[in-house]
Image 1: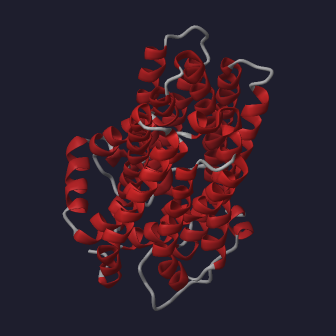
Image 2: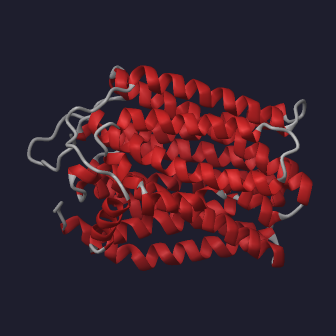
Length: 402
């Protein structure tokens, strides 16, 4: 289990060392396949909705709307992430994801039904993430946690680049339903890998996950100023910039895939640099500047730059997403071991919910203003939130786990 013992630091392992751990390799492979499925499915649904409605709001919500339902998982049943049988929980949640991916591939499904299915899957996705990250904190040592999260983030970025590029190519020859079928195939592979590699954690104490347990832990978490400041900084600036990304299709139309790929590539570079190359001290120092980098380049969109310039700005900005690594690292240190799965699930669910809020806010604003003005405005608000919350985040350095 990870600890806060700073007097006996362990050497930071490399990515190859991590992948020699069979259980981590299984979690990693399942995560990679799940991200690929989500990328193809989201791109297919966004394209389908844009073609059917031409609405920037509905297109943005279709791509990121599932994130709204993650808050329901975080506030109701997230305590299952710390249950005594996490493998069984994770496999069951992967089965639900597979059923949902197959359902989206049904041709002729009304858009209302697709949105309802999107919300249902978002609820279970939050529990899936909490369970997976709770296991991650147990299968790797404390010194390997940030490299492990970095590797998963890098893979998410790389898989998204390939997914968006592949989706754009496939849509020239297939219908969106064809992409849904491909996403279902990747989800099935993720289920098989997870079932074959992840084991039950006998070290976990017996618990009774449920609504009361979830609320008790969440109340304790949000009552503490340190974790609350970290969560705010992890959620809000990130969500506002995802709102900018949600307008790429209305902004660039056929060139939207270029901007989406640039965003994923920038995220990959940032996570590689921060997670693998920087020491813990430098990660802490870079968190605030990276949060500023995350938003500032999007201010250029007020000038409606050409696609090539916009892609460079998006690439640079997306490197700023790596600021989540030092903030997540600090949050883990402030979290008691027995509820680490739930807290990480709440962090992830809140971040995803704010992504949905950002996407909805961006889409609704773009209905009145232009996508260019909306993107620049969201970026400006993100900068303001980052600057205003920095003093509170800085104070968490003096706090220790309770």
